[in-house]
Length: 489
Image (cartoon, rainbow, N blue to C red; front, side):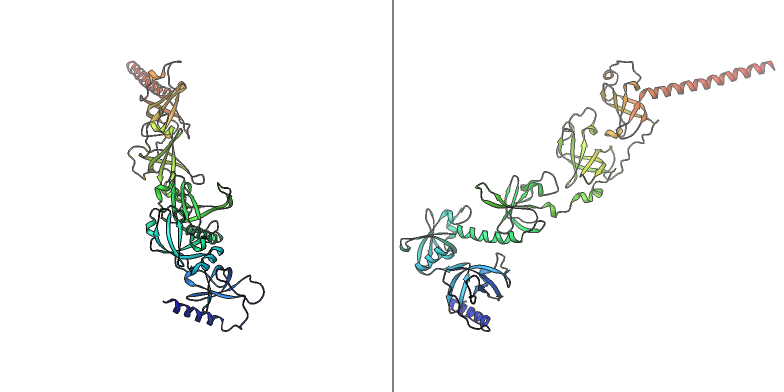
């Protein structure tokens, strides 16, 4: 569409909007003047406004071209009653047009007006020199320093040649022979404006979409629309130990939940800033809500060793669900879990207990031969039962016996010195080295209270032998008496 035709169209729209209103004297609006205006009608190609804060009398009317108000996604989001900020970029037969910039400047006067008003103008990049870009603005040759092209580093200035861009005039001197412009300043203004709009609508607990701008060791930065938020590693996933570089890359589009908004936080230069923290895992399903299904108590499960502590190994049974395999479950001589396990190793375990509120699982090694999902009921340990096992650990106060068919603490019982049937002061390590098979009687049961006795087994055997001897002797005595009576008869 030609400029003349476009002006005619806007003139018709403007006349149609205002023809029903009585004529009134309007305060003159000057080219380059910045003003605030309230939307009175949203049309297809234009948004009509009334200029505010210009004293008494009728408010001057003006319009924006719709294209000037569309967002990066091309959507026109303004509505009747909204208050906008703009600059008078055209005063003529088509009415007063406001814009985010002055468009293409015409002559030195327009450049000076743009400079004084601090509004953007259009310029075409014609070349590149050592220090920056050569830009043609309104018939004048201007210079844009390399540091003022973008908000960040510019790797290839040549790529800007031939492009028509918006600039802020930062200097006009020597009668127009020296004109310096900045695109970075304009981008910063636009970013500040967009950030203010985003911040005004942002609420804690809201789910928003954003673009990952950078990935760091401690997390990632997400652009929510002109304002960046921090996505810490701790808010990435329900899985422990995840880092931003494991799951994200610059440019990724993510949906996050706003965790925290801190206003007026001083930065390194002491300037007030707004800090926003967001979460990715807050919008993901919490695996602990399904822990009874993912980690049923008493069942054999397959897990992966993720990390060690002095008191045990942590085993992941499902993403976000870890349990503790205590070092005492790994055998009597194991002082640290790393002696028998490796990070990343897959092992079979039994879930002994679940504390969903505290997000804790207690695990034990699974008995050999049981399939994943099988019930691991363990041995039927009742007081008086006689069991077999092997010596697992030797202490000054006695021996620990690992009962055959079991693994971990539930199947490990203490045989005190007094229940071994050995002489006082005997060297247990010589008499019962680790791995020695023994038979013992259950004296006491309970969580961590399994007590056994070798002496009781021997006593039972001796009692059985004695009872057998008595029965035999009695039978023999009865037989002898019968023989005597038969002889006498």
